[in-house]
Image 1 (cartoon, protein in one colour):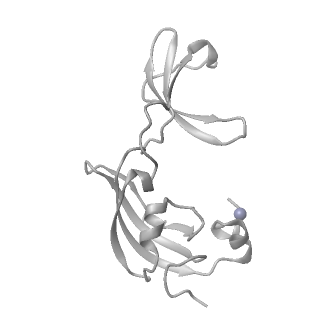
Image 2 (cartoon, rainbow, N blue to C red; image 1 turned 90 degrees about the horizontal axis):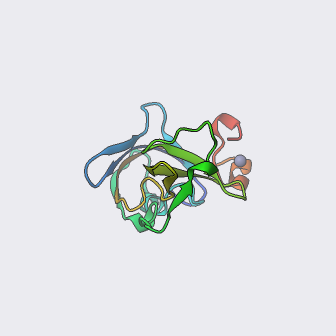
Image 3 (tube, protein in one colour; image 1 turned 90 degrees about the vertical axis):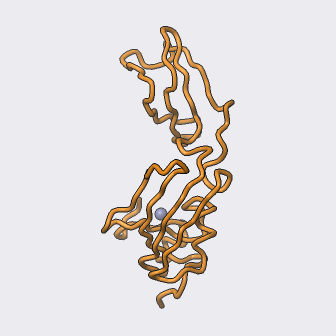
Length: 163
Ligand code: ZN
């Protein structure tokens, strides 16, 4: 049975645009590439998920999400200065570069190079959108029941394949 509205354990397709406070457009779903996610399983930021609950197919909504309900407040302590000798020798760091880093448990996260000097590099581990209030413009384009496997995993499998 097709679900009648956005609720727990429903697969939701969305067209969306995302702006920052200053009006910069930072993300936009493609015309034939909606964002597809399983509702109620922390697959999207909490502030957006909460506001989508109850919407019907075709519903359109503007949602403003505070940093605490999005990618968190900017934490000035989450910045580290590392010795350039600790970086790979063939690596040429540049300000503004985004690095993909893995912790001991294999979790991948990003760090941005914010300063380069002769001996050290300053890395900012805050999420690029930390501290930002997010302005979404969303339209619900489809709803469906998840497969038993998707529900078991807590996420959507695109075209039946595991991501
Ligand atoms: Zn899976």
